[in-house]
Length: 208
Image (cartoon, rainbow, N blue to C red):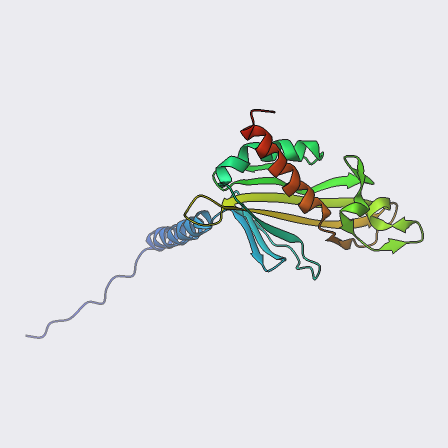
């Protein structure tokens, strides 16, 4: 007796669509899980910004020869610094849009400022070049990013790192030309560090 083997019946179009949807959904879920597993924080290569990860988003910054990331080691746990960080930003008139206590991350990306940040001219903090009107930092519309992360330096809990990222671009008033990249002078990073340490010491002494 000869048996006739039937070819498998092709899946219906609706079944194929359902299978494809399941596959895409699984891939999207895996991608989402990978993104969520990426830790929030500032990734630095030497004195240059490599990447800033916050709230599941990734912001890439151009690297600067003068360095736009400052990393300092402080002889205390990050938990002792974090409560004072927002107050330091307020003192310096820097708005706060990013606040992640778990990662010790606080700051703002791409906020607009003109001429001065607090009581100081922007040229104290940024080098953007110059034009016939003078320093571009002082005479342009500046889009600025300032983010600080306080994190434990090791597992001992005795030392921490204060990592501050400063970045900016300048666009001259009344001109539609492309923006100019700005480099940090390092002054704002140092000011944040100094004020943070002073605030922590006052807190230990029972003051503000």
